[in-house]
Every structure is written in structure tokens, then in C-alpha cells.
Length: 60
Image (cartoon, rainbow, N blue to C red; front, side, top):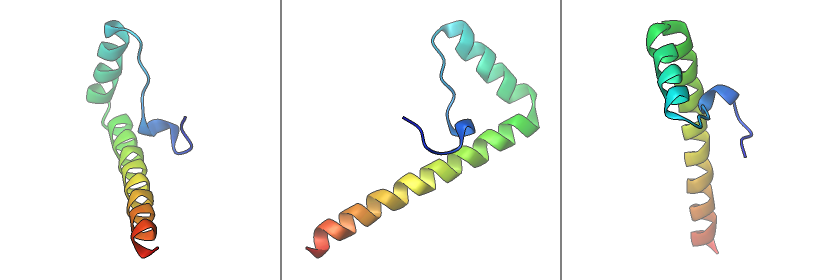
């Protein structure tokens, strides 16, 4: 389940799809930059939620 930016993850089912996704990212700097930004946002959001949850557990 994904609630954030759809660029933060790419679903592939086969080796061919994986190869095509990698080729697209490496051949187009704008697409790569957009995906990197979305991935960074997703990572930071998830990390923040984890830290908040742990902090709340320790505060009880």
C-alpha cells in the first residue's frame, strides 16, 4: 500500500521490466531526479513516523 508520491517506488514483475525501468532512469536525468526526490520524501516521512512511534512508546 502506498500513500505518498507514486514516483517513490517502481513495481516490476520481470527482469525485462526491471531492465527497462533502470534504463529509463539512467537515460533521462529529469526522470531520475524526480524519482530521487520522491524517494527521499518517502524515506524521510517513514523515518519520522518510526521515530515518533518509538518516542511515544518510551514516554508511556
